[in-house]
Image (tube, rainbow, N blue to C red):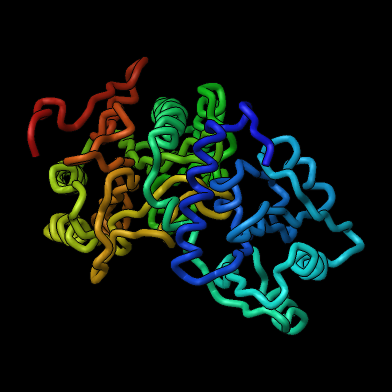
Length: 407
């Protein structure tokens, strides 16, 4: 291992992560693990590349030096970013899984119990078929989740990285809100958000911002497509800033024109859900309890809206195609997973179908502390209402500016 001082976190942080992984390996009676998930590679070694569609893996033996199998081009990322000293690159004319099998044999792992991430997006089924057919001298076992058990609780170093991501998130959201006026295109709003995030120190996020207006807000996971924003419409924004692959996310809603009674009542439901869940969240609470609280508040509405998804999810390290860690932990009914200090959650009490044709949202990214939770953000949660566009400057107000305290 190469001890170095130019990685995202101190060298000792990575050694702690590696040691804890090996403790979990020992509990599962594994002699080695093959880690192929990009987020897990980043977590363990600081390795990252946009070329993760090609097979790459870190092999961690219970004893001895870890080594990496990568595409030859990507080997430069190992040297430039990580503490890993041993690599076995394969050329574009070669075969990745054959190189992995040869390396397992070379490093004395024949006849051993080898864990691999069977549910990883980036360990394709035909690759798994090949290794099972060719590596017959060893026992191959699914170890999906063995790294995520460590990732779900963020260290203070990771919380600090997410604070830096939050600066980019807020900068992007402020710019997006400012850009929302009748006559602009959704593309222009998206451009304003992106430019502000990057100027604030943000790096390319796992997903670019979601920007939809008017009737397009009812389309799940849609973003800008050139539509021109019209007067008396609303704009739904969801932004995640990124720093060193760590993300924080938020939703906000901008109303262009007069605020209807139903939109104001929807905003009150979401603000109440966020307020009460922040009072609830602490170590020991189950994610089902948190989901039920948010879901009951949102469902108790008279504007025709629903919460049609989970109420939140773990967030942290991410590569495209998604910024969330919901496969590690999600706030959903029936789950007995318990919150612990260091967990980081995007809470999403959004409302789909207000008046039958509007989606609106207010959300927050929180981290669990010793006895409660804290937000990464300072930005107001209220709808931003921009009215009276006949004037030289639109009148901008926060809906609940007269009621800041309590739920």
